Length: 342
Image 1 (cartoon, rainbow, N blue to C red):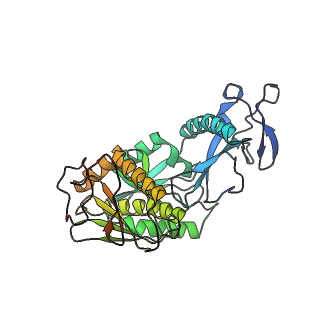
Image 2: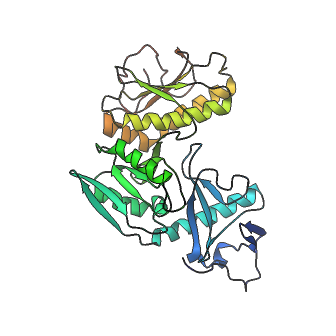
Image 3: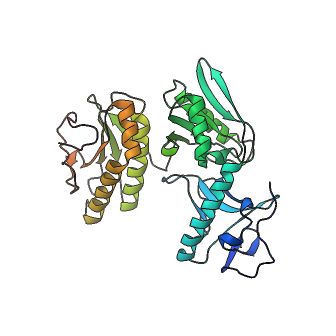
């Protein structure tokens, strides 16, 4: 690892920040020796009790790995904290930009192995290999080597990066391989989950307990995917919907018979679709409908866009959005992929 980043001779400091080994002063971007600021991927829950630590989820689900930002001091990483929420916003934007740029400059070599005619991309051992999942240019290299824009990436422990085409017949075994590497790590463990990357962006996650939920997903004969929910609170509802969507997308990409319909069915009779829940449902529908990347991927893989809807024990939930309403009795959407229910 490289040496220190802060120039202690400067007297122009922002408010004090705390690191895991002590208290240091954090300077503005112009005062930094930028080359040693870095992003490190840590397991879910890392520094959970440090509210203003400069860290964030790698992907939006409960058990997501954490990206922590700090300074590579050679023998250790000094992780950074802000003083309050507004300070966090300013410093996070600044340090993230620097760290990701620095990570992209790290040269990690790789090999492409042939497994019964299919390609497996493996980064050669390097302390920052896992962090290359944050490097869009590196992901372009993976895409080029695998010959596909959609692929799966596993980063089970520090120093490991493995990738496989999403359409590979080995995708299920790949999930098992990554889980095994996580459970028997050769370095600090990161995550047993596998991430789907499309055009350089993480769009979905898969693996056992990927998000702390146990959604059941049923594919009907007409190609609809039904995500079964069982929520006891608003928080459980949002967690299950978010994770269920990721799971549904992973399943949809395996099957060209996917109709485009993803229906979130709440099974708890006592769960109330009050105004707060309805507003959240509306937000989900609009976000999914407006996610151009996911819509494009779905159409490329199945010929259909994504059409989300909500039901409560099979009964349609009316959500006022700027789209045509969902008809729970309809067997298959007739609209083009960019349209909603009709």
